[in-house]
Length: 489
Image (cartoon, rainbow, N blue to C red):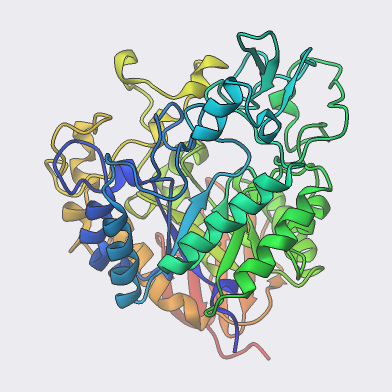
C-alpha cells in the first residue's frame, strides 16, 4: 500500500490569517477547528499549521520562545490537542512547523547566554565575519560584553549552534513532545541552515540573499545537516502511522535538494524551482522533468507548490485568475504531492495596496517592495469578511471572492478546486508527455489526459474522450482541462 504522503494534497494554514475563533481580529486554533468541515469538504488530505508557539511575534511566530506550548494569542495546549483530534476525526492529518535554525531572543536559553551561561548553545564570536542577514543588514549583533552573535534572519532570531549535542537532544525531545500529542509530521523551517561550516568563512561579496538557491553560500546547505535529518527520521519512524518530515530547503541544484529526501532522511522537500518557474510551457516542462527525475533518483515523490506565506500569490505572479486556475489543474494533475496555500482555492490575488501603517513584515527592512504582508491578508469567509477588525485589512472587492459567494457557484474557483481534488485519485501512474502545439503542454497519467494552453491565443487541444474538468473552454487562452480517454495503452 502506498504511503499516504506520496500523493497527498496538503493545505497550508497560516494560522493568524485563517479563521478567528475569539473575535479579536487574529486567527487562532479554535478558528481552525471551527473550519475543519470546510477543509474536509475541500478534499485535502492534511493540513500544515504555521507556528503557534509562544513568541514575541517579531517574525510572526518564526521566533519561538517556547517549543512546547501555545501562544495565548492562538489558544492553549488543550486547543491544540482538540484540533489534532478533531482533524483526525475528519480524516485530516496534521503537520506542524518546527523552527530549528534559531530561537527567539526571548527564549530562556538565549537569556542565559546573554548572562554568559551556556553560551555555546548559540553562535558567538569575538569578531563578526561578512555574512548578511536574509532580512537585510549584517547577520551579527554585538552584546554588552563585546562578543557578537549570529542571526541569519532578524536580530531577534539568534542562530543555534547545532554542533552542541545539547541542542540536538533538545529538538529530538521537542519532536517527541508533539508526536506524543498526535501530530502526523513536521514542516522543517530552514532545513538547510542549521549546520554552519568550521571557521565561518566569509562569502567575499555583498548581496548574499540573492545567491540563496542559485549558487553555494557558506551558511546554507552544508553536508552536516543530513546527519540531523537522519536522526529525526529515526524519531519519526519510531512512531506508528507514517509520520513525516517536510524540508523547507533551498539548494543551488535539484541534485543537492534531492539529498534532503533520501530514504533515510526527510520524506518531502518543497519544490521552489517549480514555484518560481515562469508561465511558459517550455520552462515548466523542463522543471517538471528535472523535478521528477531528481526526486525519483532517491525514491522520493516530487512536490508541487504554487504559493505560500513567503511569496507573492500565484494569481498575481502569473498575471491573471485564468492562469491561476489553469496552473491549479496542471499542478494537481502531476504525480507526487501537492500543496495548497490557504485562499488559493478562492483565487485570491496578492494585496498590493496595503496602507503603510499596517505593514509589519521584517523582510521589508531589506527591500520595501519584497514584504510578505500582501500574501498574508486574512481569508474572506463571508461577503462582509467574517472577521472583526482583522489584523490586516481585507479588500472590499474580495466580497465576491469570499467562501460564501463562491460556495454554490458551479463556475467558481472554489468549486474548480473541489472537483479537481475529487477527481485527482483517478490520475495514477507515471507522467507521459504527448506532442502538442508550441506553448502548450499535454501529458497523460493512466487513462487521464491533461491539456494546458499557456498562450494568449486559442489552441487546438481537442482530445478524443470524456471531459472531466476544465478551467475554461478547452483550448481557450490560458486554460487547462482533464479528459478521460480509452485510446491510451
